[in-house]
Amino acid sequence: LDYSLGTSQYSVSPISVERNMAISSKGNLKVVVSLGLVPRPWYHLILKTCVRSVLVMIKEFPTIRAVAFDYGGVLAYFITPQSVRKMADVAQVDGDSFESAVWKFRHELDSGAYDNTSYWTAVLDYCNSPVPQQQSIIETLVEMDLEGFSRMNQGMLCWAKQLQESGFGTVIISNMAEPTYQRLMVQQEWIQYFDVTVISGVIGINKPDHRIFNHALKQMQLEAAQVLFLDDLPHNVAGAKEAGLHALLFSDTQTLAQKLKTNFPNLPVTALSCSTE
Image (cartoon, rainbow, N blue to C red):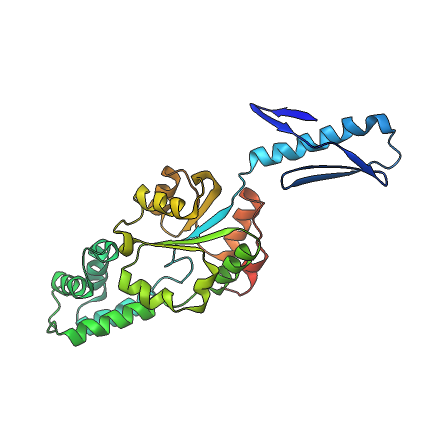
C-alpha cells in the first residue's frame, strides 16, 4: 500500500491477517489493528486510515536518534553563589567583583586561549585582589572551581544510561578547559554512558559557535535534525538551533520530561525520575 502525506510518500508492507488482527510494518513502525467482526473486504480501508493517522504523528514529531548534553547546569549542577563567595573570600574581594571577573575571562579559559595560571591571574587582577598571586593561591582557586562543578545531576545520568541502552546516541558538548575535562570527566564511571565527548578546550571552539555543533555531528555521523541538544543557557540553545539541531533550554528533570513527552515522544523518559532534585 502506498500513502501520501503532504509531499512525502510512504510505502507500507503487505498486510497480513492473524486472528482477526491486521498487521503492517514500516521501518520501526508496526501497526496492529483489531478487526473483530469487520468484513474482510474492509481490512485495507481500516488499516489505511490507521496508518495514515500514525504517519501524521511521525510527520509532526521529529525522530531523534541522539541526545547531546551540556555539562555545567545540565549533567552537573551549576556552581552555587555560596561557592563563588568562598572563592571571593580567598581572593579577599567582594563577591560581585569576583564573580564578574570569573565570567569575564571564562571564554578564554574554556577555548584554551588561557591556561589556569593565566586565567586566574587575569581574574585576580581584574577584581583588584590584594592577595599575592602565588601559585598556591591559584591552585586553591582551581580546586574550589572544580569542586563547585562536581555535583552531578543523577537524574540526567540515569537518563543518559537509559538512552544508550535504548539504542540512542549520547554526546557531551561542553565549554570546558582541557585540564578541567581531564579532572571532571575522564576518570568518572558515568563517562561510559556517553558515546562522544566534544570539549571546547580540546578543539578550540566555544558554544554557541556553530562549528562546535558541526564537529559533534561529524563525530556522531548524524544529521543535525536527528539530534536533540540540551543546555541551560539561552544563547547556546539558540546557537544549536541555528546549526540545525533541535534544542531545549534545560532547568530540571521534571520540566524536561514534560517537554520530551510533548515534543519528542520517541525518547524514553522514565529514568529522569531516578532521583529527586
